[in-house]
Image (tube, rainbow, N blue to C red; front, side, top):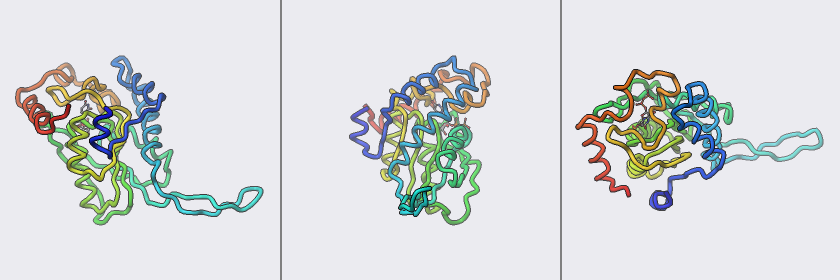
Amino acid sequence: MAHLEQRYPNLHVSSHPLVAHKLTLLRDKGTAPKQFRELVRELSWLIGYEAMADLTTRPMGVETPLEVMEGAELEPRVGLVPVLRAGLGMVDAMLELMPTSQVWHIGLYRDERTLKPVEYYNKLPDAATVQVCLILDPMLATGGSSAATVDILKAWGAARIKQVSLIAAPEGIATLSEAHPDVDIHVCAVDRALNDRGYIEPGLGDAGDRQFGTFAGPGSEPGHPSDETAEIVRRLQRTLAVD
Ligand code: PRP
Ligand code: URA
């Protein structure tokens, strides 16, 4: 993936051994929803910590039992933006790291046939109430959901936006980076490619279903492409020429 990181300097892929270990457990098809949720939470904590490494601080005085010293406090107001549903599992970990964050939910689902995001929930107030937004979504596949969320947040007035995901496809990184090169992307891993249904391979399957135990049967599982969806993925791959 070094070539992707060279091509897109906004891309940051974790190299932490704990991340690699936990992500492997998360991918395992035998991992049941309870452990899957625990792993999503632990990985969110780890990748969230890395994603916040460049947040600014300002001096803050503190009195220890021994003396007064100059400490630091986080400067920007931070908004966590989980993309429903799958992003919900990342919120608690991030709130543990930054308990004063605001949480603004965005409801998007990906149309199974067209792979385009469909917005169904957005209660953002008129003007931005935070300076830094962290978009939380475990999967960055075609990049359509993420790019749409960034559009929403930029229109809202967010000054700085970061995408925090567990697994990304090269196609999604290219789509998001080309539409929004100013958005940092923090991921645990970049996988090989999208399949004909727009699922990340090797990936982990459907992150929402695996967290919430909502498996609707064989027809809903990755691996049953319609011709139209497969052609949409091929067109995306040709356009982006990701190698
Ligand atoms: C998944 C995932 C992302 C989106 C990624 O959500 O959580 O939001 O797909 O795909 P994209 O990069 O191609 O847009 P999904 O639409 O399955 O909704 P859910 O979380 O409610 O199950
Ligand atoms: N959404 C998921 O949950 N998994 C994928 O592989 C792609 C989109």
